[in-house]
Amino acid sequence: MARCALTSQVQIPENLSTITRRGVSRIISEAEFTAMLRQGRPLRLKMGFDPSRPDIHLGHVVGLRKLRQLQDLGHQVILIVGDWTAQIGDPSGRSATRPMLTHADVLENAESYMRQFFKVVDRQRTRVEWQSQWFGQFTLANVIELTSRFTVAQFLERDDFARRFAEHQPIAITELLYPLLQAYDSVVIESDVEFGGTDQMFNLLVGRELQGMMGQTPQQCFLMPILVGTDGIQKMSKSLGNYVALEEPPAEMYGKLMSLPDTLITPYYEYLTDVPDAEIAEITQAITSQTANPMDFKKRLARSITATFHDADAANTAEAHFEQVVQRRNIPDEIPEVTLAAISNLTINQLLVQTNLASSNSEARRLIAQGAVELIRPNGERILAAASAALAPAAGDVIRAGRRRFVRIAE
RNA sequence: GGAGGGAUGGGUGAGUGGUUAAAGCCACCAGACUGUAAAUCUGGCGCCCUGACGGGCUUCGCAGGUUCGAAUCCUGCUCCCUCCA
Image (cartoon, rainbow, N blue to C red; front, side):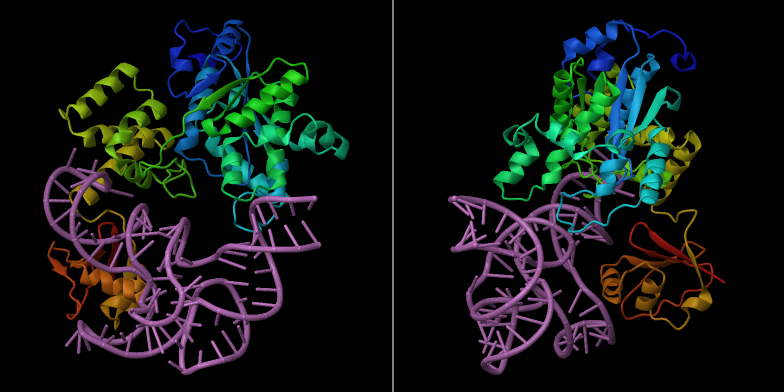
């Protein structure tokens, strides 16, 4: 509805709480923001990203959905590609010398990022700006002018700087520059509202302050809650391996969502779906009172999210796959194959390694000892592999190693 | 410029000459159970040989050395952190 009316006026919703509360950790300042919304002019919504890490996962989606909601009311997203800082490379972390990204890498990463970004955000109402447009001409004089506005003490206030300083962890000088560059972006595009996770609060506030110093109306800061990853403990992040990527294949996406601890069902509904608040309250109630099986809510969640990033068919297929393989322990429809010739004369151990069901001979031995390996005949007969006995697989048989690893023997 | 501290298996972190393939925790894998790849419980978790018992090899920043024996001691190097100036 709103999205087809590109030229229409900005809408002002009567009930702002969907915008200002759900999936929002904090707005600085909420009063100023609602006043801005009521002005009825299209707001410039700033969102930046660093094309050194092109993968988007569900943790990022919380904020992207908020952008989309505001776009649907007629506001404008300005996506800033941090190509300039990305080419320097990220100084943080101990991964010593990260190779400098080439211009081609940056372009490629940016393209990949945007492909994912626009699965949620409306491309029609988005303007893309590259940081190099303004930082390309920056001189040392500009840098000095910019850095002179803040003090080291101010910057050491930032949570992670303070923590790392206290713990004697390294802080690179360039890292201190990051908030400044990000803040300057806000000035250049005259941002009205900037979005980021709660861990971005400091950076967003520097932008707000700098704009004020430069005589602009300070931007509002939208802090998105940190999404807890599939481990149920730490924030979703690629390096922790507890993430669900947007470009994950459907079955993988669905399965990862089913591995969420039950406690995460409610927040995921709240942050990642349009299921109404009242209904989420009912779900929460049903789970806490144990009147329903949480698995069913989780299935619905997994289906819904998978459908968003793929489509309804893919989501249904993923669910069928899950029920078949995980719940009923049957063989999946599509599994890798090896030819009988390729594995003849191999011991069971070697066979498992050859077919990637085990990473090493020792691993294969362990799996067998643990009773994880079996041969499944076309007629359904299952023969558990024992360390001493030969398996003698024939064409058409399937070898299973653990719950989810299979290989079929072809002619 | 000076002084001190540190580098251990995917992560964290014990270990200061042999009982250490290296504690504990996390992650991961498997099995049981089940309501799911949830939860819980049990086991495993360097590589190679072995049906097993067992054996062999490699590993504690890098390179040398001392010793019957080194993650542990010595020398040099690389990298990191802190404090003083």
